[in-house]
Length: 251
Image (cartoon, rainbow, N blue to C red; front, side, top):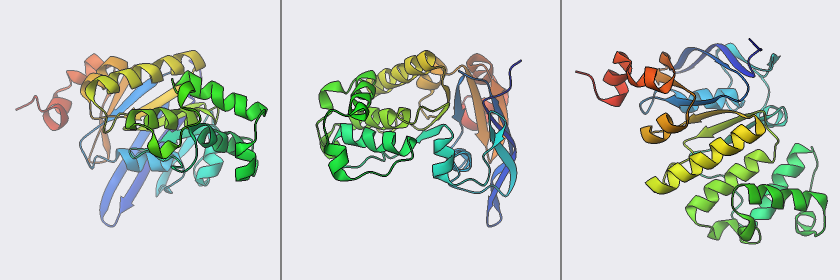
């Protein structure tokens, strides 16, 4: 078996007297799409924040292809190939869709930039930004200001920004939050297609179980900071403790 792309060992994070994450072990091979589910307050976002360097773990470690990421700042984790989207879209509202992607491309290249550079035409980066927008279905929206885009298009733009980093691992924190049911399925199908094409390893949180069980290769369930179940979607759906604490199908 090949070495995992993303791995955690014994991750722990406490806030005051409460353990938000309590010894989580995670091992993901290249190309896997895994859902991380659990009730509100289960520790999902805290775990994501430790994976991306936004929170320092109290104990344990995070590794990317064997390289230790624990202790690195978020920009260093990003540049090593871990991209993330957020529950609330995090784009520059006053820049165009293309300019938002350009910012990410320049960051990946470790370059500084000015607004004049973002607006310059006929650059290889501009073509790369357009290509990424095309992949997520936003080619016709390239010149529109992000602040006026429809909510579903903002989610697609955030995905294009994450892909501009040429990531090995893509972390999606509730990627379909706030979207209509039909839009949720379409966005996750798009994400799954791009992940398969690129060989991306994807970890996503999601409350819509139809989305989870239709897209994920494997599902991990957190409850009070601990992993209570992990496996194929049908295995997790049938797990008695998961049914009791999360799916609401137990006694």
